[in-house]
Amino acid sequence: MNVKPKLILLMLAVMILTSCSITINIPYKDQTENLTEAEEDPDKKYEKEEKEFINKYLHREIPDLEMKNLAGEMVNIKEIDKPFLLTFSRVDCPSCVELYPVLAQLKENTDICVVEVYYRNSKEEIMDMLVENGFDIDNSLLSRADDEEKERIMETFGLVAVPTTFFVDSNKTVQYIEVGSLPYEEIVNIINEYLF
Image 1 (tube, rainbow, N blue to C red):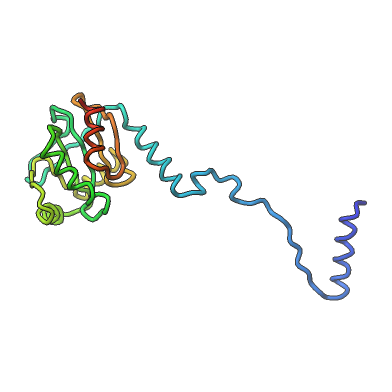
Image 2: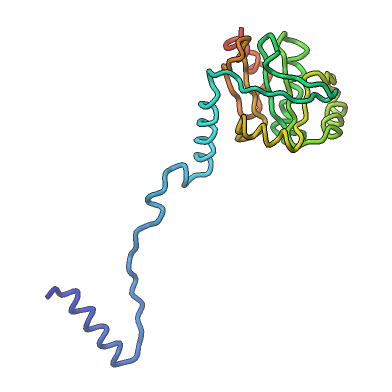
């Protein structure tokens, strides 16, 4: 018989005879050993989701999206006959707010078509934000996703965050996707590199 089991039996006998207790620390396998890096670190998990999201749409035809614009007319992105940006955002999102002046500059200074879909905001909130910031209100390519459309957008695009911008060429192929906000110069560089 091995010495360790004899020692444990002796300790148990002493405990029983003396009515005392002892705590035995039995090491256990660390439960986090089997977790992947993405599960351990929320940032890595988000990066993984973002990468999967981008890979799902990159270099593929843009999914069909038909919505009412703020003027009440139906707009189908498949009918746009030139390269365009499709941006999903919200008026109460700090990164989205950073993007608004950039989109306004793009509309003013480039030939790129900018389609903006405001996600989870009322028409009034969108209009207030545009007026408040002095942006040109071109209702033709601004859309607000109502509850039914929000579900459809989530099913179709599976957005991981806003703002999300799809850079789409004239063949309706997604050439670049940006999750987050970028400065004007970087967006213009992406447009020139991937869309023209």
